[in-house]
Image (cartoon, rainbow, N blue to C red):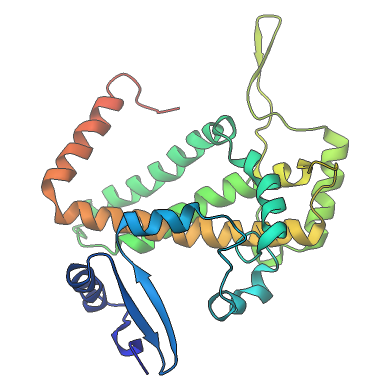
Length: 265
């Protein structure tokens, strides 16, 4: 079975990964079964060239990604070559800084809910908690708000939902991504969510995404944005808990940022 026996979703499994990185500081071979082998990269200097490589030479492995295709379709995560490049060009504007900064208040709101829950649990004497479950709920809450404007219905998100939202956009006009100031008065407009931005995106030939393509990207965004973000935040918190000096430096930086602005925007 190769190294499959060493892959464990437990504290011991996490410690085994740490030991692997200490032993092989840059990379190592890893066998899944007796015949399928891969290379695990650990050091940033080894990972960077791969991340910067063009899509034409970084083809997704069907063994790892193929099982996601019935769920995520031919989305950005699973596509290759020119198809990947076109989707990337269509999706990039949705992640522009001016778009993302409008979501900061949403992130703050979801985080404040999580903090309130933590304070209540500590007051009840429950100081030992599984952080991942709380953080996973927080990232899901944030993502549903930013992606679907609260009305997620993600279990039943089909092409019908895309068609209904497309019709709504035609009736309402394009949503604005920021406040509009007219005649000295600030007029607040609805912030475009991720689905709105996908519906409005066009390529160089004026072609937009099909209903199936939008559904695939929304499913991928939910998959990657929710669980992956929760895992990343949990990993950061775990490492901060293991290194008090870095934890103190991060806390000081946060306190400095919030010195004059209690609600970061």
